[in-house]
Length: 149
Image (cartoon, rainbow, N blue to C red; front, top):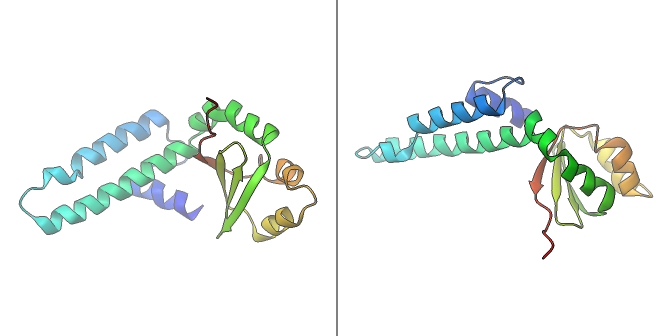
């Protein structure tokens, strides 16, 4: 959750920001902080380059957790959590990443460590996740499902 707050602060937005507003802010920031605009000052160019990388990362992250994005990808998410088994679980500082056998992966935020421990020790990790994780925590897609050929 700290990451979300940092990114919102960096872009100067709140929870209610829309995708259109995010896109507009992002474009304005990139116009201002694009490294190619600096030609003669190498130190300033590196500083602006670092700032632009942070802005890009913040923009993509906030887009991935935006309500419009979640709503648009909900059918895909529901398909994954109901039809695909868990392949791997990773827990790092209140962030839980669940990789599924279909190739998709989701990152869940502000997950208590005891919930992670219960998930790992559950008789059925899929059932535990359906009941206690999938609809309880803010999430974002971090890997798309492999497309059938």
